[in-house]
Image 1 (tube, rainbow, N blue to C red):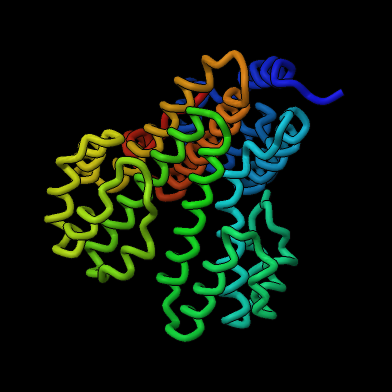
Image 2 (image 1 turned 60 degrees about the vertical axis):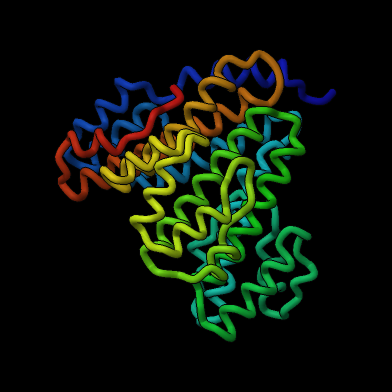
Length: 323
């Protein structure tokens, strides 16, 4: 007998009780050494390890083992996982081009086997890759081989990944997944535009890098970015889509506040759509995103401890959590 979402939701609601709370996060911020941080996480059974990286890897492994055991249809996670496929392809491509092994940079889980990625690059057999990646992979290979432009090569892969994310999201029959990835891709485009306006990149790069998505004014953004950073920021400040105007205000104050705004925007969607859901895949996705956000928060705290940052500075960088 197959798994049901009724069973999965009951299971995930119980697991949610073990997510980090606001008081847990505040306790982590109060620590002055990473040893204290690791000790707390070990004692809370958050993960196992002698350092933060080991603890978070342990947490990641247990997260995916759990989700695979309770998800009636594991493909609901594909729009999130294919970003790992894109990362792994870029790692393998650059490793083979440079003649340096980079296996330690590969990440799991993935939908494309590592051996397939290696074979595709080593033998230029891009036809063995999934449809969404094969053409982009070939173009990225040609760009990095003939133009030695790693940034443009990455942009081609990232664009293909965003397009596939949206395709999978729209096919998932979930308003949450569609809205989540529309928002994610919209802000990925905004980040590309801002970086490009500062680097004075050309229209060809912007067209290759940006992905069409609902309510994104691609031509207007490209036109503004080509005129420079100040013109772009002025243009983006007029947009109400995805709360862009407020996001830009955060960017003016600090790029790190902008990053937090975007992450909190996405988490806000998960809290509204997933925590209250009583059926479907959303509760599982909410739990997954909750754990991923916790990991990001722990990384921020660890970085703050290592750099002896002021506690208030660390707090300003923290993301809204799901627990």
